Structures are given as structure tokens and as C-alpha cells.
Amino acid sequence: VQLFALRACMNLSFDRRTGLDVTQRVLTAMDKHINSKEFQYESVKVLRHLQFNQGLGAPLMRQDVGSRLLKAMTTHIEDARIHTTAFRIILNLAKESIHRLTFQNLNAKQTIELACSKHPENAEMRFIADRALTFIFKELST
Image (cartoon, rainbow, N blue to C red; front, side, top):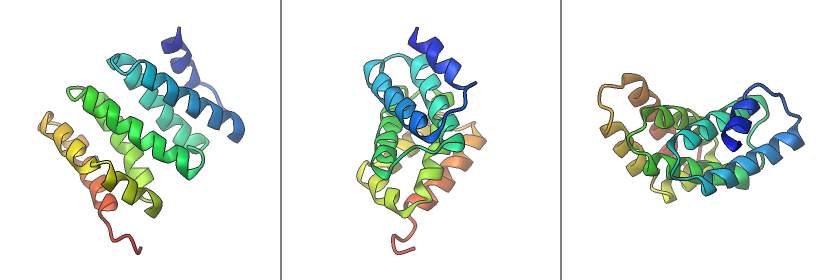
């Protein structure tokens, strides 16, 4: 049922307050269903949808998003769909200096490099990952 609800979220539009609530519910569900590859993929897709349509909430919530993305990527290291979609979110989060240190502290580089090593043929994934890493390790003073 939750998987169908996630898929339905992709077709809905939310105001800011409802979008924040949906983001929090998705993060909670991701923790509950961490071993389900399909659930993690659908969750990452919904987070990306929310990011571009409503934003991902306050900085603290966006840090939670980053943490959950890395956890999903590590748990499902073989799933290129999760990785590519997660990289796009990470790239956009890392453009904000507040998140660069968070990703550095979460060892994002190791997770990103490991994910890319599992899919050497995926040039799109590598390109997005390289851009994300460029932002993550950009000087924090900028």
C-alpha cells in the first residue's frame, strides 16, 4: 500500500506545508523499508519530485534527506536507478554550502565512488556523480 501511495505522490502537487509533511513521511518510510529496493527507488523518485516542485524543507530536513539517500545507496549498492536519481538530489543539495560539510562528514565521497565502481558502463551516473563531488568538495568559503 505504501508503495502505491509513493507512486501516487509523483502525480500530485503540494503546497509548501504539505510538501514538508510528505517529505518527512517518505523519510520515515525509507527507514522502515530499507531492505526493499523497489521501495527505496520509489522513495528517491518522490524526494526528487518534491525537491523540484516544493523544495525539501528546512536545512535540517535536507540533511536528513542526504543521510537517507546515502543509506539507500549503500544498502542497494547494485541498483543504478537508485544511485542515478540520488546523485541528482545530492548534486542540488551540495550546491548549498550548508550541505557540503554534511556530505563530507557522512563520507559521501566513499559511497558515491563505490556506487560508480559498481556501474562503470553508466556514463550518465559518473557524470552526475563527478559534478556532485565537485560541489561537495568545493571550498566552503564560497
